[in-house]
Every structure is written in C-alpha cells, then in structure tokens.
Image 1 (cartoon, protein in one colour):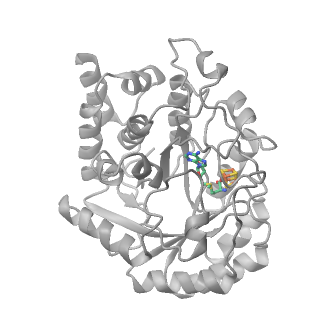
Image 2 (tube, helix red, strand yellow):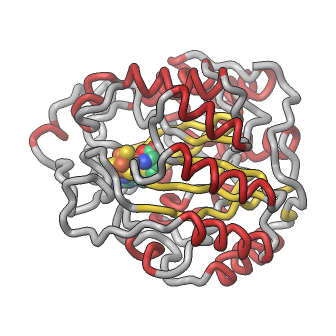
Image 3 (cartoon, rainbow, N blue to C red):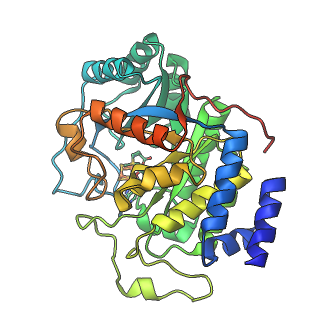
Length: 362
Ligand code: SAM
Ligand code: SF4
C-alpha cells in the first residue's frame, strides 16, 4: 500500500510513470486510491464539466475481420444496415435539437462512404455549427485530408493493443504498423486525435497494457477511450481455450473470460494521471459490464460521455458485443438519463464543444 501511495504521489505531481510503476498500479490489490487520485487530477485539470457527444452509428458493414468484434465481415449472424447521407444529416440535426454540441459518426470500415459522400456529410453537419468526430477506421492520408478539409475536427482510432503478435492474431489482414501510421497522419493533419485499447483481450498481458499506456502518451493522444473486452459468441475469438492458460504468471496473461470493468477503469485512471488535460470518455462497454459503469468512470478520471443518438434498426443491429448498454432507449431518453446522473454527482453538462484545453505539456 505504501508503495502505491508513493507512486500515486509521483504521478499526481509529475504526470510521469515508468512501466514498472504502471504495472504496480494495474496489479495493486485495491484500486480505490488510484481512482480517487485520478478524480482529483480530473477536477484540477479538466474541471467539473462533462462533455456530451452524440454518437451516431452510421453503418455496421465492415470489410475488416477483427476476431473479437461482432461487426466483422464474416459474421453471417448480423443483419447489415447503413444510413444514407441524408439520414445521417437528419440525425445530426435532431441531436443538435436535443442540445448536443458535438456529433460522433462511427461505423465499421464501409467503403460505401466514398470521400465524396463523406465530404457531403461532413460539410452539412459543420453547417449546423456542431463539432464533428469521426470513428470510421483506417483510411489513406488523402482520405483523412479530405475529411479534415471538409471540416472534421476529431478522429477516434483505437490502437486496440500494441502487442504486435497479439495484434496480428486478432486483426487478420491488418497491421499494427499501419494503424500507428494512421494515428501519425491524423496528428499531422491537425485532428484532435483519440485512441485507446481494449482491456482484457484473450492473450493480452498486463505488461503489454503498461506499454499501451506509454504508447498513448507518446503520440500524444488528445482523447483516450478504454473499453473492457466483452466476449461475443458470434465471433471466433477463443474464450477460455488452451491459449488462455499459456502465459507466465508474472506477466498475468488475461483470458477474455473475466469481467474487465475494474481493469479498464484502472487503465483509464492511470491515463488521467499521466495526461491530466486530455478528454477521456466513460465508455459504453464499461456501462455494459456495470449498470453504474459510466458514473463510476466519471468519478475515476473520465470527463466525457457519448450517449447514443442513433435511431431505428441500426441502433439494435450495431452489435459489437452482446448486451450493449441502453440499446432500447430513445435518443431523448439517453440524453435525459445521463444528464440527470451527471447532476446527481454534482457535475455539470458542458455548454461548449469540448475541445481539449491544453494546460500541461506532454
Ligand atoms: N471500425 C472502426 C474501428 O475499428 O476503429 C470503429 C468502429 S469499432 C466497432 C469501435 C471499437 O469497438 C473498436 O475500436 C474496438 O476497440 C471496440 N470493440 C470491438 N469489439 C469489441 C469487444 N468484443 N469488446 C469490447 N470492445 C470491442
Ligand atoms: Fe470492423 Fe472496427 Fe469491428 Fe474491426 S473493430 S471488425 S474494423 S468494426
């Protein structure tokens, strides 16, 4: 315990931790001191305002085949849907009416949305005076450039894991090198750049998670989203097979079977300590594993929530993993519920677009 307190003091004062210290915090028996420290740092550097971003899931078609994800191209169990540009613009308009200042468009990697279609969607949303975040996967430099020129402000692309062997196994046909290159290109083009990981992937080690955390700081990201791994039975990812038992105890190999809410909360809290002024969402996957997940996350370092503003079929067909939180709510209910919860913990809903305000040099 004493050691944890010393490490936390260092993190709070210097915003710097080495790999061994991060590992110690990931493994420490009780995370409560870590969560309290991250909450205090969030309050000091990011303030009490919570930024709400309206999440619109525009397509569940995906040309990629990530082994853990329900949207993967070989998942024949999933009915596929996509929204036309005018439907997306209409949902953005409605989200503005609900009071949102930022829209997040998310999808599988769907080539239907050509650069021309994306430009049309982006310009129309920017004409509504909204900030716009894209989360539509790996694209070329020129595509990212076209979206930026059309007005996109932010881009989310999780690195998922920096363990190259694990990445190659779980993301067939993709490469860690290219994903890192995409993040570099996004930074170069001036996007507010978000990344993050899945915590609890089968075969992932705590040591590799410590390296992931240092990688996110090295970019440096402007936003970091951490999701606990949630097993989807319609995917081939092994669940408790022989591979899960293969690791050395010292590095703690995860097996994809546990509830990784606490682990993802720890990763998030450590990121807040070492990158005090970035935007950090309380993620849907956290809420899926714990009914109070988003509020607990907001009290452990997070300052952003992305309520779902998708309507109709796509809301239920965008099934990355089963049991996704709040699928049956309407966009209006999603907004009201989270606003009430935010107020109940003494926080306020931001009236602004929620750009990162840099107060600390990385
Ligand atoms: N296709 C884009 C991409 O991969 O960047 C964006 C959409 S993708 C569905 C959004 C995120 O879902 C991924 O970055 C991944 O971290 C997360 N995800 C996929 N499968 C998951 C699972 N089984 N458990 C938790 N998160 C998962
Ligand atoms: Fe497609 Fe993204 Fe899912 Fe991978 S994580 S299968 S790229 S939607």
